[in-house]
Image (tube, rainbow, N blue to C red; front, side):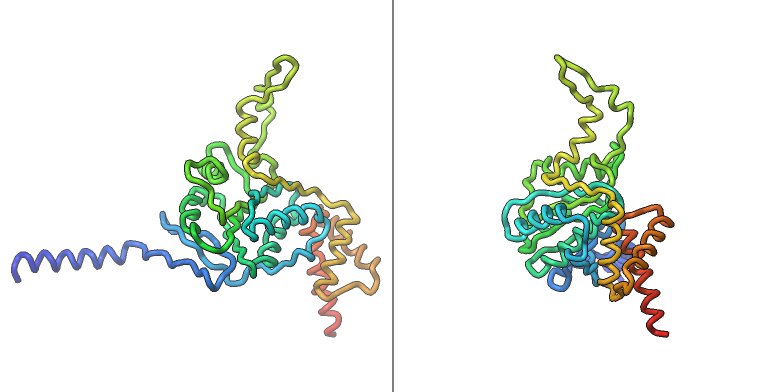
Length: 291
């Protein structure tokens, strides 16, 4: 074997060993067989992973948030129809249906081309890559960021600001960002921030820290606020879910008492708590009927 053949053989062995170490290329997105995706990362490589069984909640199953439902559905209809629409920030009390509302929109409008991509807060720095991947696609994509909150120095914070409307590149017409948070401004607010506030000619001028904390939420065109449910709202939601799960109460007062006891034990009268109660109630009733 001459020197050249020896070098080629060594190079081939080296490439074989490198192929075992290097990650395989990410799979292409399943555009035809899925309506929901998650952005996944392995090292520096990201890809869209199809969600085999997306949550099939219906808009009509969500109670106590009629006005929020009306506004976000109108915005989504505009988007799906190819008309101008806004990025949406849903903020407020826990368990009031913010995330479920977005999932229900997918359930209703998937047949018309709506697609949902869930992106974790820690992966928001990949938004430019996701936008490039979706460019030119005929579908209409919602980037879903759930339960957002940031510290000022987190990279995802600045990446989201840029993606909303701060980049030199134009925003894509087939993409919107729908985000949920328990914080209106997505960042912790401290009493010390107010010390920077100044007065000039009787007018109040917020300090730079306050301005910075409001700048991200102001980039969302539509704000929807969600509030804690009162007792009657909570009970009506529990009754509706019990009926939906096939266990309506023969004695409504019995169900209401049980639902209130459940709320007291959980310390919460939220829609999530009502759903959890209804699942427990329906499960027990179905078991009783099987005896």
